Length: 154
Image (cartoon, one colour):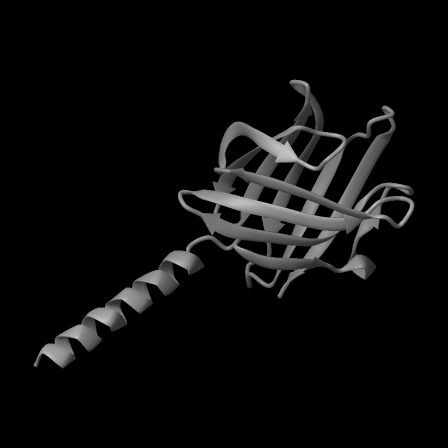
């Protein structure tokens, strides 16, 4: 009898954990689909984005390549509550604020020294298999940049 109770409890726990992780469609690894994306020439391309739960926050790690083909990496840990959280490793910004609009949409604002340097909108496809980031802003030299980056979920 105890074995059945323990197994039933474990089953409920596993199902609860699965539902909790499925609750946020952003979580997981996303890779750039370059053939479906457009970038301002010379701008950094973020090739892999990973969202993971970090306690009651979300950790976002981004890998890519700059205009010279050198590897780039930045990390952000925060909530989708519209508040600024530190952004580490991005030469163009030092904070990011993300706001969850609905289950499929996030908006983001990157700032450097308190000044907005870029804004964007991330929309996850209805099937959850791809996401599109539309962003605009300026780089460190003040040059305008725009991107539409499409990512596939891994």
